[in-house]
Image 1 (cartoon, rainbow, N blue to C red):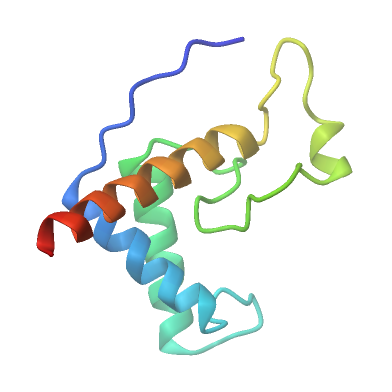
Image 2 (cartoon, one colour; image 1 turned 90 degrees about the vertical axis):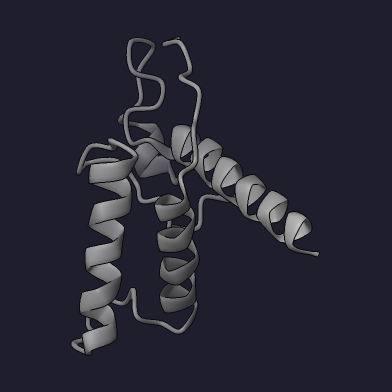
Length: 110
């Protein structure tokens, strides 16, 4: 398995993650949504995942629900050479790092 890299969460990453989650939770991640909020969600999703986190376009977004196991269709794409081809497990680790950074930030503000 590939070596895991250290995740350094920047203030921009944390802010985009919070806003992206707010938009997702309000339903603006729906592909049928043609609102300005959906456009904002897509821009945040691309900047956060592709630019700041360096994820490939074929990998799942850190704004997706990555709880549980990946769906069978994604598991079939994994192989011994690429056990995280779709980025499910690395995405979950990134979500955990982003959430931990937010939790630490909130505890310092108290």
